Length: 308
Image (tube, rainbow, N blue to C red; front, side):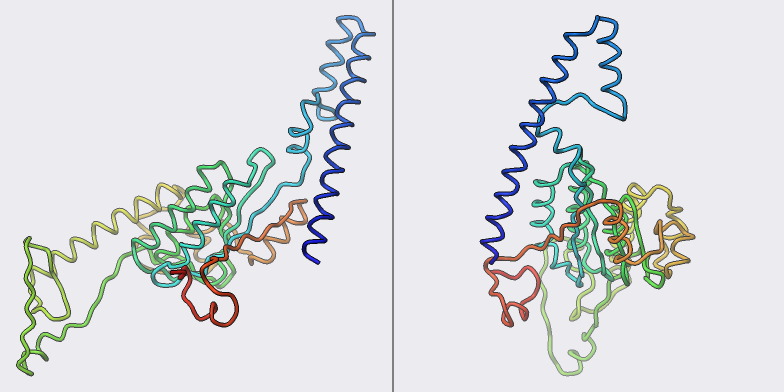
C-alpha cells in the first residue's frame, strides 16, 4: 500500500507541476500581449498593478511554488537523558531538516523538549545542533512539556520562542559535581589505592584519594569557570533575561518562569502545534531511525544512539 500511495502521490505532483508550468506560460503570454497594446505610461501603471498585493509578476514555476505552497513546520522530539545520548539521532534529524526546509517559504522548526540536564559536553553539543537550525535562517520554537533544567535549558534558550506547559519546570542554570569517597574505608581495610599523575591538578577529587582543601578549591574553581560559560551562552541567546537573577541554580514553574522571561508563552505543545495547523502550515514529524539498530522489542531495549 505504501508503494502504491507513493507512486500515486508522485503522479499527482508531476501533473500539478505540469499544470503550474502551463499556467505560468499562459500568464506570461497574456501579460506580454496586453503590454504591447498599452502606451509606455499605461504599461508602467500596469506593472505597478502587478506588483501590488493583489497581484505579482510571475518569475518561474519553481519560485511560484515556493511562495504559494504551505509553510512547513518540522517537528523534532528530544526526551533527554543524563548523557544527552539522543543528540546522536537529533544531529541526523537537524541535517535532514536543514537540507529540506525552505526559509523563503516560511518554514519553521518546533522542538518538543523534556530534559533535566546532564553532562556539560553532551548538552553543549545538543545546543550546538540547534544553533545549526538558526544558522539556516529557520525560526525555532521550543516547547517544554515537563522540564527544561540545567542542560535542558541550555538547549531551550537557543529557541526564538519558548513555550512551556503551565506546570513545566525551567531554570537550574548552574553547575554541580558530586562523588562518594571511600578513602577512609579502604584505609581501615588495609587497601592502598595508588594513582600516579603528571601535572599538579591532573587529579583533584577522586573516590579513592584522600580529600584535601587544595583539591576542593581547584574543583570549585573549575565548575565556576563552567558556570561563567553557561551564563554567557544563555545571556547571548536570550538577552531579555536578567542572567544574574536567574543563574542561581533555582528552578521555577511555568507562571513564575514566564515572569522571569525564562519562557515566552504558557501553552502545551499540542495546542501550539494545532495553532500552526490552523494557521495554514503543514506539520512534518521528523524522526531518525538508525539502520544499524534492529526494529521491534530488541531495538526498544537499546539506548538512544546505539548502533554499533
